[in-house]
Image 1 (tube, rainbow over the protein chains, first blue to last red):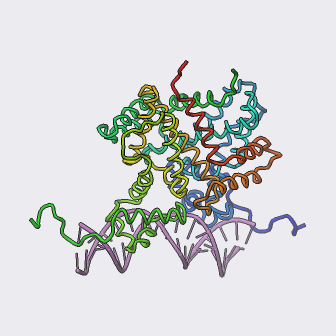
Image 2: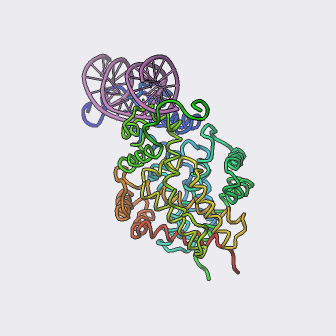
Image 3: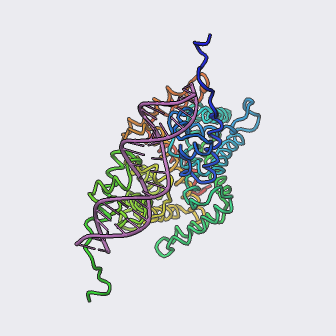
Length: 225
Length: 225
DNA sequence: ACCTGAACACCGTTCAAGT
DNA sequence: ACCTGAACACCGTTCAAGT
C-alpha cells in the first residue's frame, strides 16, 4: 500500500493555482517582460528552479496562465437562448475585454497557440452559435476564423500603440495614446494617415471595435436574399 | 575647416544596412529568438556593444528592420490606375506575403508599433485607394483599421500554429501544421472545433485569407443601393 | 517527491580605456 | 568617433545534493 500509486516524499509547498496567480499579478503590474520564471519564484517564495516541479517549462506556465484568463468566457449552462448575433457578439467582445484588462498578456497570447481547454470551449461555443444562425458547419468554421482574426488583430493594434509603461489603461488612456500617435506622424508627408488617426481617435476603442464587429458579422451572416 | 561639421575619428567599419541584413538573416534562419544584439554583432564581426554606435537600443534596431521589410510594398509612381478593390486587395495581400516570407519577424511586428516611413507610406497608399472607391475620409479610416486588423490577426493565427522550428514554411507546410492541430483536439469534447479544423485545413492559407479578404472588402465597400 | 545552492550558457546595456 | 574588454544585472534551465 505504501508503494504503488501513493507518492512518497514531502508534500508540495505551493500549488499551480498559486503560481499562476502570482504570474498574473506580475503581468498586470509590470507587463509581459516582468513575467519570468525567477520573478514568479521570488513572488511565491521559492528558489527559481522549484518552479520546474510545477511546470516543465516557462512556455507551459505561460500557456496555463493564458488559458486561465479565458476561464470566465463560457458559463456552465448549455447555449443560452439569446439570438445568435447577440451571443456571438458577446463572446467576441468578452474575449477582447479580458485581454485588454490584462495587456501584459497580449504579447504572450499573440505569439502562442490558442488551444487550452478554456480556449477550445469558447471556440466550441462560438461555432455552435454561428450554426444556430443557419450557417453550414463549413461556413461557420470560416466565420469563426474571421472573427478570431478580428479580435486578435484589433487587440494587437490597441496594445501596440500603448506606451509600454502604461499598464491596465482605461479606454480614455487608449484614446490619448492614439492622439499622441497623431503628433508623431508628419502630416505634410502622410496627410491621409494623420487625418485618419484624428478620425479614429474621436472614437473610443470600444466603439471602434463594435463598429468593425458589426461589419464583420454582416459579412459572415447567412445570405437571406 | 577641420573643425566644424566634419567628424573627427575613424570612419565606421560597418553600415546600418549591413547590420540589418545580418539581422534579417538571423531571423530567417533561427526565428525571432535568434535575433539578439550579440548574435548580430557576431554576424558582422564586431564586439556586442559596437552595435550601439549604429542603433541606440535593440528596439530601434528591430523597428528599422521591420520597416525595411515593408520597403517593397509601395512602388515609386503615384497611385496606379487599377480598380480600387484590386489595389486594396493587392496591398493587403502583399503585406501578408512579406510577413509570411519572414515568419520570425511576425512576433516582433505584433508587439511593436507599425509607424516607420515604409509602414506609413503603405498606409497612405491604402487610404488613397479606399477614398478612390468613394468612401469619405472618415469611412476610409475605419475601413483601413478593419483591413489592418485582418492582416495582423490572420498572420498571427498562421504563425502561432506553426512549429517554432519550422522556418520559412511554404503553404503546404502550413496546411500540414493545421492538420496536425486537428489530431491534438479531442473530438469527443470539442466536436465542432475538430470538424472546423478539418474544414479549414482543406484550404490553403492563401485561399483562406482571400476568402476573408473578399468578405471584409464587401463589408467596407460603399453602399451602392 | 520536492526543494535548494551552484552552475551553465545566454541576454541588453553601460563604462572606462584605447585609437 | 568608433571600437574593445570588462562588467552589471538579468534570463531559462540543469545538475547534484539534501530531506
